[in-house]
Image 1 (spheres, rainbow, N blue to C red):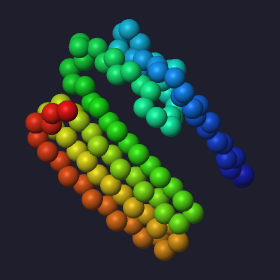
Image 2: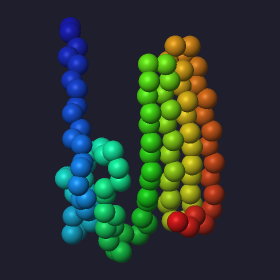
Image 3: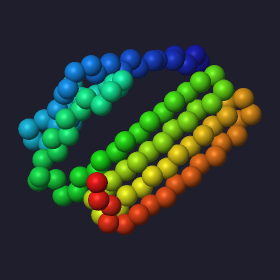
Length: 102
């Protein structure tokens, strides 16, 4: 049985776009990647808890680095991950704090 590999092409966002539709759902036009921040965070006040995330990933032939900073209103979290693709070794670090304020 052969397994077919499928690639997903994520579009590049090059101009400002609102993150949410009027009802609070994700705007399909906001899905993608960008070279510079271009999302307009128009999260509605009706949401119980708003979660704000920043995620970065950088990859080369030798290394993969990723970092995340998250604000979940009552708590915050930050973490970083480094993976050496040649040796298959990784290191990670994480921290959390309460009462996150951005």
